[in-house]
Image (cartoon, rainbow, N blue to C red; front, side, top):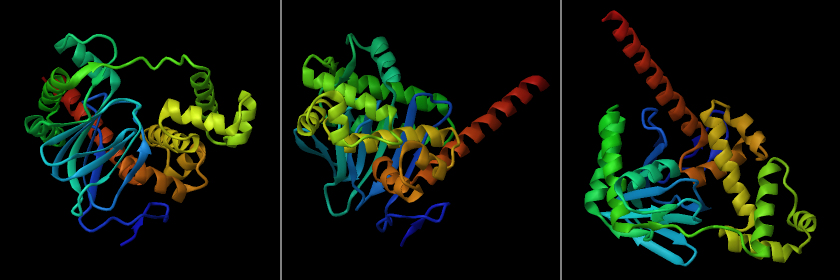
Length: 305
């Protein structure tokens, strides 16, 4: 089986039994949701600007981190802090099924202030924990959101995040750049972000920053957990998500973020996000449209009363 996007471009085929839905509920700001079953699909090294909370419901997920691989099976919760590089793949032949929450940094910080005594920037001190009760809460958040019950979904979300923070939370260390290498890496990152559509080569970038290519490569990997080209691909996909959410067609999005064409965007976007860009954009359009219709119905109902 070969998947075809709206533009006719081929993307990687799904393994038998694989499925995924990545979406957001407009009535739950600061939260994205993913439910999926993956068998052959593997997420390359990437990071998120918010948190990742995964509840594994069957199979085994293997998460690659800087210091090795951790595994989570049924009843396990995976907790990943913002900007932590990681990969993910099946840890068993049957793959894995999970329900995932992507709460923003602002959302988690607000819950921490209200429900814990943690100070500073909060995060999770463990990556994997056996928390079947929290897993059931996360599944309930998905069911409530899919049923249009934002009140229930929001309530369960706050309970789930508060429980995880109380059991596995702590202050995150500062990411301040104190060394010359860290400062060089930060400058390189800023340059790549600014010139995303036409980035310099490693040698050109090193020359601009007054260092050598290998020194820049080492400094960048030490600061961000991945080499510059891997970080740039991830950054391009992040920007592509924002453009798709704003309604930009995938073909235009691909060129705007520096991919050579739509198939290039499809390949990298699907690997990192877990769904093709066309499906991602359609989900946003569908949920936003439904939210606008609901708001209009409420307004008309209020006027009639």
